[in-house]
Length: 79
Ligand SMILES: [Zn+2]
Ligand SMILES: [Zn+2]
Image (cartoon, rainbow, N blue to C red; front, side, top):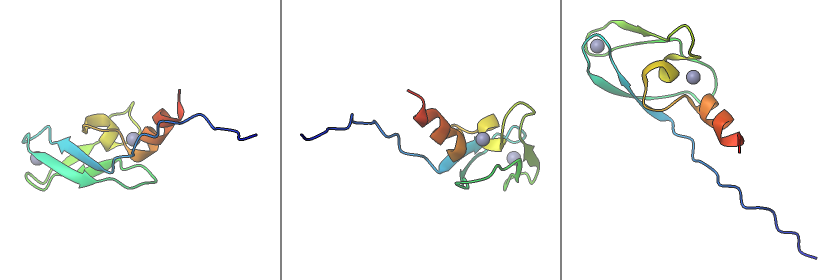
C-alpha cells in the first residue's frame, strides 16, 4: 500500500531582511547569515551601530521586517 505523507507546507526561509535605522531612518536590505546571530550591524548611511534589543536574539529580530533564518525555521516547524 502506498503511504502518502501529509503535505507539509514549507515556508521558504528569507535571507534578505530590511532593517530600518532608528537614527537616520534609512532602509537597508541586508543578507542574513543562515546560522548564528548578528548582535549589531553598522548603518551604511549614518555609520552608527544598530544593536539588538535585550530581549531579541539578534538585530534582525529586533528591527527588521523578517526574523532571522534561525527563528524562521523554528516558526516553520510549529504547526
Ligand atoms: Zn543610519
Ligand atoms: Zn534572530
